[in-house]
Length: 417
Image (cartoon, rainbow, N blue to C red):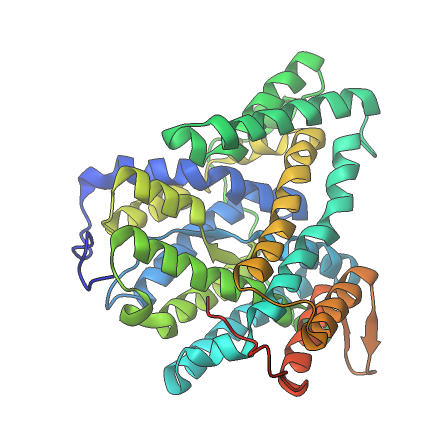
């Protein structure tokens, strides 16, 4: 990549407001789906996505990256588990700590270079961690699709979930242009229309909601167990972040890994995640859907993303919008999640395949096996003052094993991201 390419710097223009709203439309489905699944406030998620993107832009002000930050799917299962174990406020404290992990990594990169991250988190560790994120979530997706706990029949739920799933698959497979970038939104829309036809949508919350309302902000509390559980979960989104920065660099023909550098982009992502949790919102991550939209529209000016953030913040105060989204039946979400959680797991497998991780090598086989079983099997290590379990335990085990197990002659352990 050359140093300029299509990117010509940051320009904030009033005429780009409509473009900014368009990019929010692309991100909207995934942005609101995460809080729906975790019980977080949808309007708060919109607000923190906007605030997080602005924080990220401030941190990368040397060369602002044209990217949008919003709800991270990698934290769905950890948030669900943490809320059940320690409550919502302690979970938010854990997410603040996870954001702090990004910040620490950014300073390590600043002083030791970015190759340190690749050595600490090679594909043999990151791949199976991503796999566990998808597989741990799969039972909840199936339950939602089957209508467990719903007031309508399982048969009705499966029909609605099936139609939502098929609509999403068609959008991914046959969609052209912008339609291909919003498969989640299309799946939700089709499933919602079918749900109305079946008479299972309750519109009363929309009627009761006011047009203008303050989002339901909340504050974190800090409990050691919740923090130690959530910090290792940030391992997978860290690599996702690097991949997305590389992707937007390829689109704009600009080397953002070099300038502003991972030291600043990781700092921005970390501060955005911690800030979101301080307001009671989901952790942020860079959105690949928006990168796809940048490629399609050739809108390389990062000032457009400033407008996307502003529009998200303004919509956060529209009470009827959050009420409308809350009326989406669980079966609609379940149908889409059956696919998306599987896709998350397949991304983990792709990581292992793409980087040619040799699973015939005993060292690699041990690392992958223990990450999968510790995370999916529900292993708990309780040290009295703190305990480790789930995805966090699997990630920690993978990092430690990668550091202590000797490398074999036929496998170096790192093939680059």
